[in-house]
Image (cartoon, rainbow, N blue to C red; front, side, top):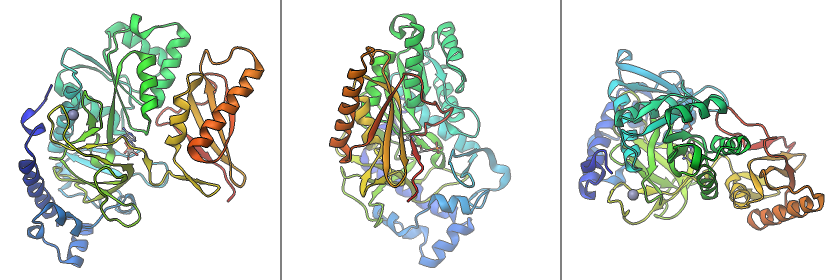
Length: 429
Ligand code: AMP
Ligand code: ZN
């Protein structure tokens, strides 16, 4: 199903030409922003110099630090009265990153979500419960406007308590949810404890999960536990929020809306492009924004381009699910480890539950605390030790070091209200 078939299936040469035209227009727009004007002056680049897709490499990168240094409105590209909305990112340190939307930007963001919602087979007959936080975080409002555009009945549930979420799902026969993967796992536990079988007692059929990294194993775990189809949804505040890239029904990578964003994958250290299929850092340029377009934004998210066409007919290229952030790589005893590697091992083990935390202490000691699945402990302490060893061995095979493993009761690890905090680093290095 298409929301805007013509643009979603636009043949490649036309899509490339559209990108180029919009990129030039964006550079022209950014000549009004002192930060960018200064950079253009230094290199002497003019909008007319951008003649091919490769010319994007003549433009400067923008980093999260640039956004913070120009906070609150140094990167605004329109007059203040043109601005309709403000969102900030959920960053953990220092000043937030602020992003402005003009009226057209609010509309475009909703349009991109509408495309994504439709491509998973959701229609106006669906009841869409948005379980992401409403407020400065984009996951609430931006997704809300998009689902409304499709015509769904949208329930602005926010992250609320699980009891309330369940009540809404039962009373309004919710069919689609938008939820953090960590919360989806927690919510599955909650239903299990209440003795509610979602397949029998609820009408759920699809979930959009995103806003934090998760693995294919986690997707499967959520699908099994909640009895629905899970689609990966990628976005970031700097590029509107959700709706940047989204899976189609094939669930084979996320289509990135290339009429709105120029996609590059670079080597994080050298800044040079990597080949299709190779993992690198995703760099995005917003080419269809008015209030605050960004050039070559270093997302720090690691992914790759999936080569070849998709069976759904969309021509916008697909990216692989995010495998980590270049800045969340842990170095433990000299070994590079991504938290996702640990998650992949844990979520593939049926005895293991749905919540975990990685703790780093002392000089370089790693402890993985993980919940047992509700049926994972039969009361025999010996079996517990055996399982503990099994988990540690499987982790060693994946990450090359053998962490300490602590098995804890289902539901005993803390659950964050927003994005899950999986790594606690208290090392005295
Ligand atoms: P925020 O701007 O606060 O919404 O955070 C955006 C960041 O969340 C991205 O740069 C990613 O690191 C992460 N993120 C968003 N969606 C996904 C996803 N589907 N998979 C993995 N990470 C994601
Ligand atoms: Zn597709």
